[in-house]
Length: 72
Image 1 (tube, rainbow, N blue to C red):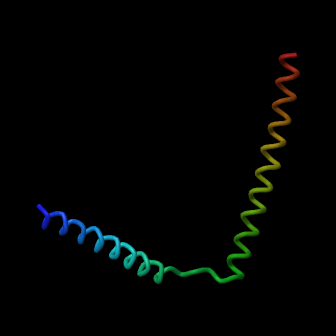
Image 2 (cartoon, helix red, strand yellow; image 1 turned 90 degrees about the vertical axis):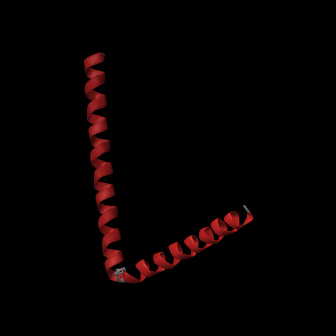
């Protein structure tokens, strides 16, 4: 019984180490963006978020006025 428990504990420890080793190996394969690319993409995301927020705010205002007009 004790051998089985020790064996599973060793496998657990080896599994965790293997997962971290494989994760680090995969992260080394990643092509990371340059600072300029990251900045440009961040600006694009902020512009899209701001424009979608404005559009949804405008539509919310229009529909609330429309329902207020219909209901009363």
